Length: 292
Image (cartoon, rainbow, N blue to C red; front, side, top):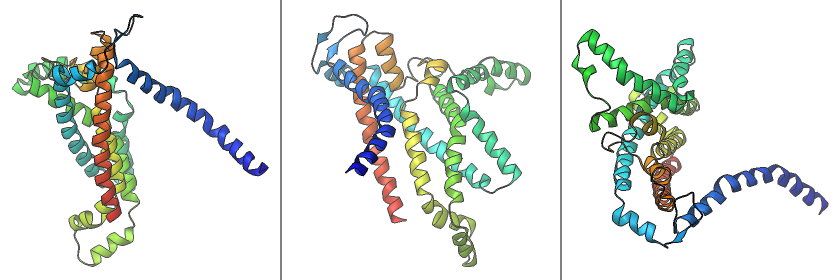
């Protein structure tokens, strides 16, 4: 009994700080968020008016910008998840072999990821602004004279390009880890049997790196859903609210429009949606892992 008590005491000493951190960092704020969603409150004053489910009803009847932001977020997620994973996997296939060139290439692709997305946004804001203006005056190419940030369609692609470029390194590293873990004997046996590189990739490599694919799909999905930095710094949701994300709309509702209760209700609806989508994604990819 004393031995069990001692083991439990050691376990509690190491786990208790983490439990306290999670409790105060996530659980309690979430419960407070749920509480505030039933009130009409500006987030500052002491007066709070209980409105019940009116905030949630208002989202589905008069959501306005929330649903526009949801459509942009879904469209961005679709483009971002597909493009960043395809490019990252392709780069990982070329850089998975050990060599000086591969090491330099990995560093080249990974450096943008360790830079703050806010800093990246400022850099690209300069590129698409004064940078392109200077290039247009030098070359006369109309491509550089397009209103990249002032046109809704072009602004969307600018956001996709920026985020994909910045995050390739992270997903590349995950895919390289998965590719390296594939037994070389299987690839050699496939070559002996006459399988080409393409067949070897789809029949052996791709099925065996499904755990890496699951992780990359999940992280890219969650990143695309919570996109905020780029919109906040680079486009401000413009032009004409064409690049407003759900996260940015919630921020504006709470801290610009001072509708804190309505904003918390929006955030809860968004959380439920994200949980639903990510759960479906995990179920699909986990099934593929089991089949392997």
